[in-house]
Length: 208
Image (tube, rainbow, N blue to C red; front, side, top):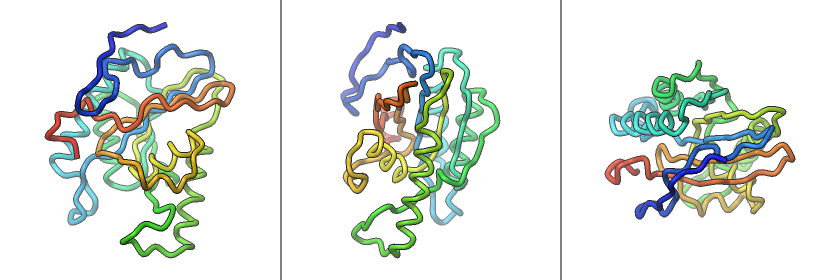
């Protein structure tokens, strides 16, 4: 069992100083979901200077908490803001090449006030998000640690599925840029959400 001194961040209310993986029983898949950094619509969806700083600090935090543990895979959405964030994290954590995959793209999964998204497009987005859940939230024969850089809406949707609540509740949840969500998938198929939307690794002025 990996022990660690724990303290609570007054800003986020989440435990910090806690190991990324805890005690890992045989066949545990550890997923570290990271939302991309802040980005600008006027620049093709690329990260802003603040967004790059968020990504750098997140990568540094992950490197410290990995404590030499191997990252088995670093995944990313195919959208520029996620790819750029993942590339920065890869450099900081000395991870292998980023693997971009379309099922991690952002989506709009239900009606949201102020957004006119055709029902057919929302259905397509839900199907893609469900495909992402099936791809990543599955059992593994061996212990694995995977970092997944994607989007706020998708992370909220996946967490709703993981805790078995109606997925329409994703709209009630918050997701900050470069926040970290940690999930364990046990060999039994049980899914445990260890933390959600952690931001204690970022200075208050960089939490957006």
